[in-house]
Image (cartoon, rainbow, N blue to C red; front, side, top):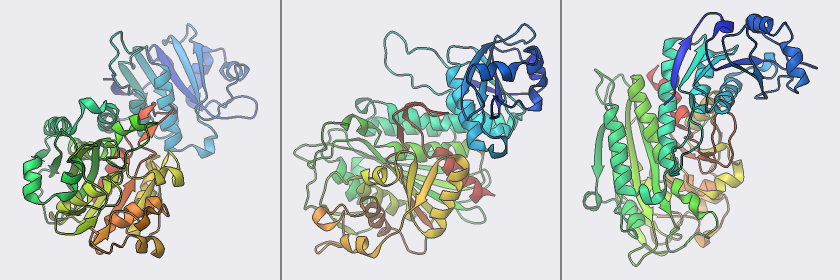
Amino acid sequence: MTALISASGDIAAADAEVLVVGVFSGEDAPVLPESLAGVDAAFGGRLAEQLAVLGNTGSSSSLTRLPAPDALAAKLVYAIGLGDADDLDDETLRRAAGTAVRAAFGKETVAIAFEGDPEATATGAALGAYKFAGYKTDGNGDAAPAEVRIYGASADAAAKAAVLAESVALAKDWADTPANLLRPPAFAVEIERAATAAGVEVEILNAEALSAGGYGGVLAVGGGSSAEPRLVRLTYRPEGASSKGAVKHVAFVGKGITFDSGGINIKPGAGMWDMKGDMAGAAAVVGATIAAAKLGLSVNVTCTVALAENMLSGSSFRPSDVITIRGGKTVEVLNTDAEGRLVLADAISRALEDEPDALYDVATLTGGQLIALGRRTMGLMGTDTETERLRRIGEVTGEHGWPMPFPEDIVKLMESSIADVSQCATGLKRDGHMVQGGVFLSKFVPEELPWAHLDIAGPADSDSSYGYIAKGATGFPVRTLVALLEEFAA
């Protein structure tokens, strides 16, 4: 684990293997901020000139490595571009810091000196230090730096950045873990371990309890697997707060399909290996809940995650089945590969029994999200106030989202002639595929309750590394959920 430390003083005297400095873009050469005067002097006043010769003119996240001159305490200098000084924002700082730390793997100590908000720099550095341990028997390459010092950051800012990065890393680790090593019972135990360590109360419902409680969606989806489903409930209450009263109560719900074969409507083989990450929504809401506890946020949080493995066997649920969700609503099943919304319906129904002030569910729900919005923008559905709130927060955190409508024609397609609601569009029409999932879930949420559904099918995983994001699971949108809780706590 990388230690994140606040630092102050003359950056030219930073005693670290790598000194990372931020430079702004210029027409022919990068522009050095005044804070780099001492570093520039160590280069004989020619740092900008040397960087320009090497092709670095300060564009965002451009990185140039230089041996440090004798006048500096550091051994190496990494100059990283921050783009136009007038356009500097927190996401630019986060990505630049993450890029620099990823480039410094194999080094012991790193010192970072950027203009702008040091908390954003600290967050990007902490996120960039992540590396999935993996299962290679001959080692997994260079390790992240043991220590990263952020110049200008307060101790509180560094501590918060570390908490956020730890919670994101937890979600990443779970989503990257092979499905044979994280089946529903094992995942429930892992969640319990992490939550208990953070002082969060945990309740786990096994298959028998799910049956007694009428959780027809979770039981149907998990019925084809030899690993029984689970429903895990986390409860965080700030010290001195009750479940009701002045302190707001937020409910999180997460989809935790530890592997999705598609069931009887089996998926194509190509790409099915990515389905180990179909529990990223559950991982994210658990990570955010644990972060809230570690940060001591003044908001009540209840987190409900439904864990199941959607497998093909003689006990699998079928197209044409009618199942009963907790609370009594019936659902006509048309496609066993649209399983996530069924377990979410159960979890939402249970979460509503706690009478929260607002509810947010997170899921890798549809391929339609990826088609409509790509790999870096989540789909937001629900009440207008909450989808706009999440869009706005996502602009700040760098975890972008876009509100989607519930068109009348798509709503009409979700009607069933034999049950309260159809699981997906009748005739399996693909019209508004992402929106279909949101429309279905809306049937289980009271109209008066502030609610948002976050479809993270694309953003939950990255096929390449960039900024503070490493290839693989991203931990999206843990930081947005924490920022959301901070608003409720304010």
